[in-house]
Length: 368
Image (cartoon, rainbow, N blue to C red; front, side, top):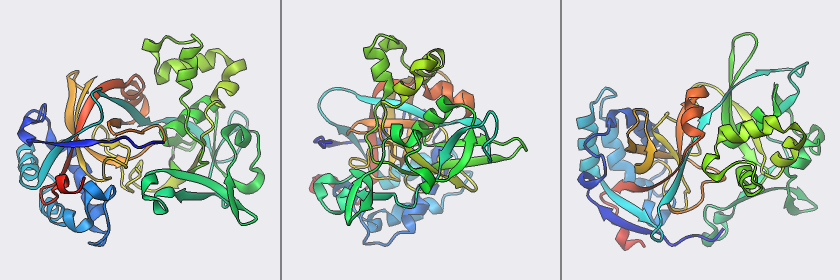
C-alpha cells in the first residue's frame, strides 16, 4: 500500500474541540498503561514512526511525570499534565475528512472440546507461520507486514481463509476453543479478540496471535455492490443479519475476505492491543502506526455520538492497529465488550479528524 504524504500542523491544546469539556480522568488508565510500556524501553530505541515519534528518551520525562500523578486525579490535574508536557498536531492528508470506525470484544458461548453444537474452531497460531515486518528491511515499507511459511529455503504465501476453513492446515494448527456459529467466529476474526463463555461459568479470553498475511477485504463492500444492503445501512449488524438469512451464500461471501486470524489465550486484563497493553473502553484507538506512534495520546473530533449522545470529542490513546486501519487519518475506536459495545461499534463509520499529542521537546517540524 502506497504511503500518503501527511502534514502535521501544530495546534494549541486549548483550541482542541471539546478540550475543556472532556472527562480526561477517564483516559488516565490508558495513558498510564501506555507510558508504562514506553518507560520499559531503552532510551535509544526509536518510537515509530521515528521522524515524529523520536526515541524512548524523548518520552521519558513526560512519562515519568505521569507516573507521579495519582490514579484518582481529577480532570483538571490530567489537563494540567498534558498542557505542561505535550504539543498537539493535527494530521492532514488532502482536504477530505478521515474515516473513523469502531470495534469491540464479542462475548460468545464456546466449548473446550468439540461436541454437538460446537464445531467451529478458533485456531492457535501454527508452528510454521512466519510473520515479517517489511520495514525492518526497507524504510519505505514501514508498517507493512507479510506472513508465510518456509519451503526449500524460500518464504511462500500462507493459505487463504477459504483454504484454512477447508482443512488445509491439517494438524499444524490446534483449536483453542470451539464455537457454535461460524458467523460469530468470522466476526471474532475481524474484532481480533473476544470473551468465550464456557458451560461451567468460566470466561476464556482470546486475542490476536498472528495472521495469514492475506489482505483484509470488507465483505460489506461486496454486499453493497451487489445491492444486498443499502450503503447507508451497512453495519456489523446488517451484514450479520444478511449472512444468517442467506445460509447457502454465507460461506462463499465470508471467504471473499482471505485474511485469517490466529488466537491465543489471555490471562488477566484484556483485550491486549498491538502496543502490548490492555485496552480501555472508549479511550483506546487503533491507528495506522506509519503515521501515529503507539502509546501517543490522540484527540478525536468525530461526527459520531458518544455515550451521552454528544459528538465524539475526547482524548484517546493509540494502543492498537488493524488490518483495515490504513491511512494518515484513519481510526478505530474500541468500545468495550458485549452487546452494548457492539451497538456502539457496529454502525460507526463517521467522518472526522484527529490530533496527535507529542512531547514538547520533540520539534517535529525539524524531522519532516
